[in-house]
Amino acid sequence: MMDILQLILLWFGIYYIVAVSLNMEFGYAGIPNFGKALSVLVGAISVGGILNRLLIWYFGVKGDLIEGSTFAIARMNEIIAAHPLAGIFLLLIAILLAMVVGFVVGMIFILPSAKLKADYLGVTLLAISEAIFLVCVYNLSIIGGYYGISTPDILAFAPGEKRGWIFAGIVLVFAFLSFLFMEKLLNTPYGRVLKAMRENEDVVKCFGRDIMKLRMRTMAIGSAIGAIAGVLYSFYTGNIVANSFTRVEWTFFPFLMILLGGKGNNKGVALGVLAYVIVIVFLDIYKYDIKEIFHIPFEPVWLTYILFGITMLLILYYKPTGLIPERPVKTPPVKRIMED
Amino acid sequence: MKELLRTEGITKYFGGFRALHNVSINVDEREVALIIGPNGSGKTTLINVISGTLKADSGKVFFKGADITNQEPNLLYHCGIVRTFQTPQPLKELTVLENLLIGAINPGESPWKALIYRSWLKKEEELVERAIKILDFLKLSHLVNRKAGELSGGQMKLVEIGRALMTRPKLIIMDEPIAGVAPGLAHEIFSHILVLKTRGISFLIIEHRLDIVLSYIDRLYVMFNGEIITEGRGEQGIKKVLEDPKVVEIYIGE
Image 1 (cartoon, rainbow over the protein chains, first blue to last red):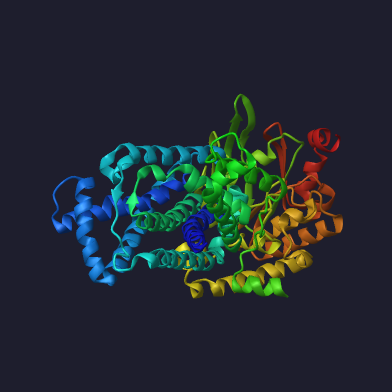
Image 2: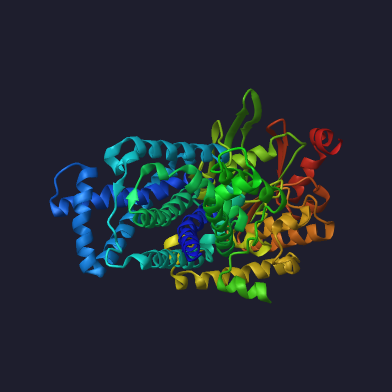
C-alpha cells in the first residue's frame, strides 16, 4: 500500500508540472498545444543528449553515446555516492539546462501560429511534436532512441528502501514550486491579457497588444516548465527510452487532467491531476484482476485508453468547467473590489 | 480646425464585389463625424479598413499627417485609435471589470515584469479606479463582477464603450454604439461623447438612429453602394445633406 502511495505522489508531482504549464498555455492563453509532449521530451534530451555528453567529455570516456554513457555514469554515480551534494547539484544543473533549452524550443515551436489558428494550429503542433518524437526514437545518436540510455543516479548516496520516498519528495517540491510560480505569474495583468487573448484575439489586438509576442513568451515559459518534468522523469526511471514520450501520456493525459480539474484554475488542475493519477495507478496495478472479475474480452492495457475517452466525453458533456471552475485573475485591487 | 484623420480614395473589393469605391473622408480634431447609409453600403468595411482589420486594395489613410494605411490594429492603438464593434465582442468568460481593464495596457502584461509586483501595481490601482468611474457613469456598477457573457446585448455594448474609454485615445471609431440601447441611455452616451470631445477626443461613428444623434454631430457623410454620395459640415451643412433628394430617396424614404 505504501508503494502505491509513493507511486501516486510521484506521478502526481510529475504530471502536475506538465499540466500546470499546459494550463497556462491552453487554459489561460487558449493555445491548443497538442504538442505538449515535446517539452517533456526536451527535458529528456537535456539529460540524455546534453548532460550525458558533457559527462562523457568530462571523464574522457571513449565510445559512442550509448556505450560511453554507461561508463561515464558509473563514474558519476561513484562521486554522488561519496558526495550527496554532487547529486543535487547535478539535478539542478540538468533542470536549469532543460529550462533554457525548453524556453528556446517553445519560442520556435509556436511560430506556425502566425499563420494558423485553432484546430489547424493544434494539428500542426501535434505533427511537429510527433515528427521530433519519431526522429528521437529512430535516431539512436540523440538520446539512444528505442535502445535507451542510462542517466546518472542522483540519489546514489541513499539506501535502497528510502530512495523512492526521497525522489517523490523532490518531485513534489518542484511541483509545488511550479504551482507557486504560476499563481504568482498569472494573478497579474499578464494572466488577464492571456485570458482575454483566449476569448477574442481581435479585441486584444485592437487594444494594442502584439499577439505573436504574447504567444511566444507564453510558450517559452510553458515549455521551460514542462521540460522540468522531463528531467525528473528521466532521473526517476534511470534509463531514458525515447519511446516513452508519447503523445497520449504527455499531451492527451495532461489535457484531460486540466479539463477534469478546471481549465484556467491552477488548484483545480491539481485536483484533476490527483484524481486521474489515482485512477491510472490503480488501473495499472489491478488491470489483470479487473479483467478476471469482469471477464473483459480484450487486453486490459486498453482500459486506460477507454477510460480516457469516456471521462473526456463525460466532462465535456456534463461539466465543461471542470471540478473547480475558473476564477477571475485576482490582482490586489481587483481582489478588493470582488470582496466589497 | 486641425485635421486628424483623412482617407484618400479607399477602394476595397471582396472577390468581384466592390465594397468601397474611392472613399475620401476627413475627421478633424475635436469633431464628431457620422456616417450613415443603408445596409450593405460599405460603412463597416470602411471603418474596418481604417482600423486595420481589413486591408485596402488601393487608397491611403492618414492620421495626424502620417500614412497609416494597412497598419496592424495593435500599432494603430498606439497611435491613439480605438474602436468598438457592431456586434459586441465581449470577452465572455471575463468579468465586466476585467473587460474594461483590457482597454488599457499595463506594464505587468509582460511576464518578466509581472513577477515584480511593484512595477505594475500602481498602474493597476489607477486603472481599476478609472474603470470603476466609467462603470459608474455607464450605470453598470452593479454588474462589475459579472461575467460579460451573461449580460444583455445592450449592456454588452456599454461594456465595449467603457473599454474604449479606458485609454485616452485621440480617435474613437464606433460601429453602431447605441443600437439596442434605451433612448435615455443613448442620449447620455452621446452627451458623454460631447464631454470627451471638449477634452480633445474625436469620434467617427456609424449609426442609424439619426433622431437621437443628430444634435451631437459636427459632420455627416452619406454612403451608398460603397461611395460617399454627399457630405455636410456644421448645422447648416448637415441640414442641407438631409434635404438632399438623393439622401431622402435612398435613406430616409426607405
